[in-house]
Amino acid sequence: MNSFVKYRFHLEARHDNPHNISKPKYTCPGCGEKSFVRYIDQETGRYLSDDCGKCDRLNNCGYHYTPRELFRDRPQCRPDNGRKSFYRERTDWLGKEQGFDAVFDYIPKRILPDNLRPVDIHSRFFFWLLGLFDQHTLESPTALRILGDYGLGATADGKVLFYQIHGRQIRTAKIMDYDKETGHRQGNPSWLHVLPEISKHYPTGFRLQQCLFGTHLLSRYPDKPVGVVEAEKTACVLAGLYPGTLWLATGGATVNLNSDSLVPLKGRRVIFYPDASLDDKVYKDWCTRTAMYIPSDTSYQVDDSLTGDKISEADKEKGIDLVDILIYNK
Image (cartoon, rainbow, N blue to C red; front, side, top):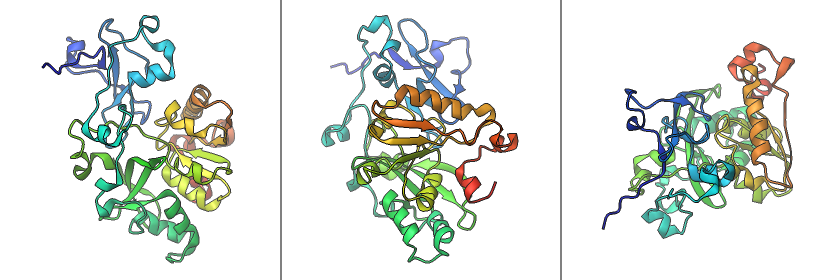
């Protein structure tokens, strides 16, 4: 039996543009780099929406917005006046075994090596939190609360794992390193789902669908107002400084501002805090995306304290955030 499935919508390849030496790259909506490959309609040869595609920087970004998600979020973008396409998502053994949605995968705890499980104090990031809040004492009530709430993990070489958990299921974890004295990031991030000990369980490839960092805490703290920032580090620090608010993070400029990630915010009071950016681009993008994807019955606003003439152009170019102001006095 021939198992080949012809996909109407696919990522643009070299044969789609025979005069190009390589497939064209566009600016990624997630990381802002020229690493974005767009989806193309096989029947018309036209691109889908300009944010529908995949970033080639798998380890550093991970942005992937599929045609299926696009048509779910914006039905008007479906070609042929809504006629159902031949687009199909694949399934694999792990998804079938766990009964997961076939669109994306989870990482069951049973396949996590012991040294990668959530809640581990042995990261340089956690050491920095100890110094920030309680002078490096392990009896730190603030740092331990942050560790426990967010389930921060640690690798054998001291990097921190920022787990993305939706419900009780792990979607992935961003692996990052920080200087234990300054708290400044070191090197580029990587991802739990691409580690060999995890990826070996997904023979057809891991289908990533991220969620907001801290999503699992929405059910734990149903009455807290919600603050959404960009960086996981920022969410953790603000959780220590302002515990009356539940702090979540997108993990990137616009990576997780989509309907799937924002649906859990339904009915909550939410303030979004975008980082500073030249021409206030991030602020404008967040205003557009929240207006498009925020669920009904959600009270929300996008904070503008890092826009306009409130901060310098130099700080905008650096892309400072609330932690830079509150901790580093930028």
